[in-house]
Image (cartoon, helix red, strand yellow):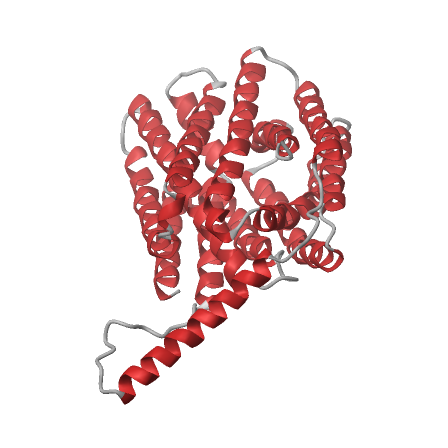
Length: 399
């Protein structure tokens, strides 16, 4: 039940995710200004992601940071309704991003500490799938509001109201764990396992026994971190200007403007299916071997978007929608895998590092994606994203 507040929070941000870029264009902004807004916000959130993770782990208190995140989002989204200035909107969004990430590290730690290691994948998959349904409903709300021609202020009021509901529910339902030890136990288990394998190999070699089937290798944490940054970079290059690309091809096909939200509803639906599959397969524990394959497939489908630009208007909308559904599905599996792995490889006290790494890549991609789209066109965006996905694939293979 403690996840219910996060459901409404994601509903509000699902609605905001597509509405905000379109709103910036509507009030006279450009793709470049969208990129500046997203990248500045992410850059400012990077050090605070680490700070929130450090503070919650140090004090062993997590609820207060979740409440701070949801309340701050409520207040700042309400303030959005009083401005039509792109510059002021960028400022408010940047402040909101700093406070918004306060719930990310505490949420990850709560899942890791409330469940045993063998249940992490299942628990992360359930949380992400549950909140993805909220995100999907938020997109559906955007579709309905757009179709019924509601004004921008009404949409922003709804986003703020959903975050207020998230705050109130979390105030009642979220509880800090009585004891925090599960991640420490996992770290000890990994060290003991590594030492055990080392002793086995050494004794086997002394006895003249072949050990070719036994590997003594620690996780390459640097490669894991590099892979996360590259994956986030590629994703942001692709998705930051994506609402504008979808809006353009929908207009070219002479379809209703509300269809933009419908396309991203289907993208989110793919994510829900991915989380459902991840939860079913959680006991197989194939996270390391599957992560690199998921990233490789993302790269291939990024290149497929190039084909969408060569087709007729309706066919272009159809192919882009299909690719986005697959993207949602693959991203769900990837996120569950890497969240579980991060709780293993990132030590206690640094739980915010996962969001820092995602933020570093996201900040760069959020700036580059719209800039490349405006300067060179979406063809270059898709090529660049595909190449960076393949580089991320190499990093995860090394890991």
